[in-house]
Amino acid sequence: MSKAQPTLDPKDAADAEEEAEVGAKAFARLNEVAPLITLRDAKQPAPGQRRVVASFVRREAILNRDERIAGYEFLLDRPMQSRFKDRDAGIREMYDGLLMRELAGIGVGSLLGHRLAMMEIGSACADGDLPAQLPRANTVIFLDTDDDAVPDQSLLAKRIDALVSTGFQVGWCLRHAAELTSAALARCQFVRVETPAFDGIQLKELARKLARLNRTNGKAPMRLIARNVQTYDDFQVCFHGGFDYFQGPFISSRKSWKNPKSDVDRLRVFRLLRGLRSGADQAVLARDLRTEPVLTFRLLRYVNSAAIGLQRRIGAIDQALYVIGVDKLYRWLSLLLYDIKDRGFAERVMIEQVLVRARTMESLSKNPIDPDLAFLTGLLNA
Image (cartoon, rainbow, N blue to C red; front, top):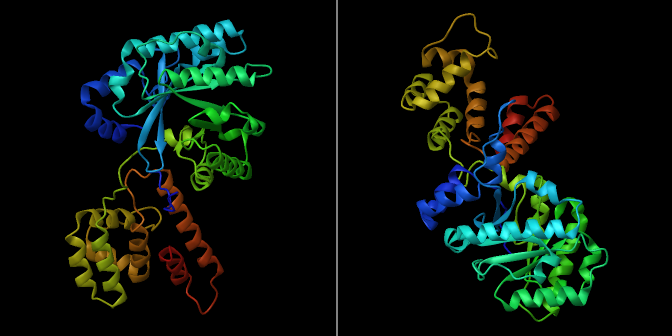
């Protein structure tokens, strides 16, 4: 298990990555026949307007531990799902068959490349003939036993073995800790845990027990999926607990798959900070600032903001430096080190923690310690 700190770091940037690997045409077709859930949710129809839906199949991205898209879960749109909820098994079986026929019809295997296609069906549906066009090698079928009053372990084991014999990989939907004792679970290649059903301690315990089961069953290790990951804390627990894959609102809400970028030249900022610490002349600082348009613009915007409260507008760098002084300039430049363009959740959390630490140091400072110096100590001690 990797010890590296995860940085969550699927939308525009994910699209670019996939286009390079799968091909632009295949990816465009995938978006057409099975749009991402995030794209669907981002474009709610205006009041009084009807939604135009080209497909009722949706997909949700699943990340691996390297922050790459390992596959997708394919599912029916929410209105379609709601129609078979709380209905009898026959209705559920009909909708499961509809989902599989749709995926078989669009040739999902050719659109995904090496990625996994995951879907959930009622356990009873596994008794029927599954579409021959479904790709066997890359498809993981999760059996939902939630509708079974008392799951028959021997029958479940036969269903799992039958699916595996035809080339599918099989997953178990784990919603209750008691299911860990299921004999059928040990036959699966994937275990998907509904994270909202467990607290942090329980999630770690589940991962530990499943890892122990992996060591004792003599088969290839089961891979663990954390489903419906809601928050950064949930992700941290699951990541450090040893889960292999992650999906849910927190994962899907990421804005970028690229390394966070900044409009600010950090090397130039460090040089200016070094100049301030060494007592550089104001004219030298002004000259260095003029060579960096972004810093110049931001400094003038800051000086002319309501926070400074000047009576007249400042338009020159020399005047701006004179107004804010050395201490405020040093503090402002230090904050720019944490300026990240298109920041994701991990970056936002990091910045929040840094600022909280800096503010705490500032609040705790007493004479003869300068509050600004205490703030900067907390800010830079990250």
